Length: 126
Image (cartoon, rainbow, N blue to C red):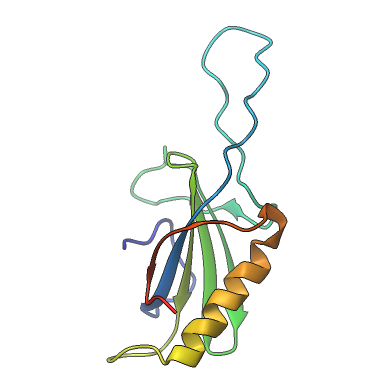
């Protein structure tokens, strides 16, 4: 799964989850023209520009966790999905199952304002 935007951690992605977010309310249009781009689903997400394509509107948040960096990423071109990834200095092999469960718990905690979100894809699965 390719990463969007630029991460502050250069460690590899050792676990990721793709969550389906509820659709936003339709904007009220007061003038003609296309609707404005949607706002990110979480207040913690801030703009994270893509250096190679300045037209992309990527939002991300990064937080240091026990053994790496937890990163949430949302792309306004694909607004129905929120991606979470764990970047850690873990090379070779698979992430231990207890660390995968901890990663899932951390993601659920940070996405709690959105309610329970269905999982569209994940690696590794708990």
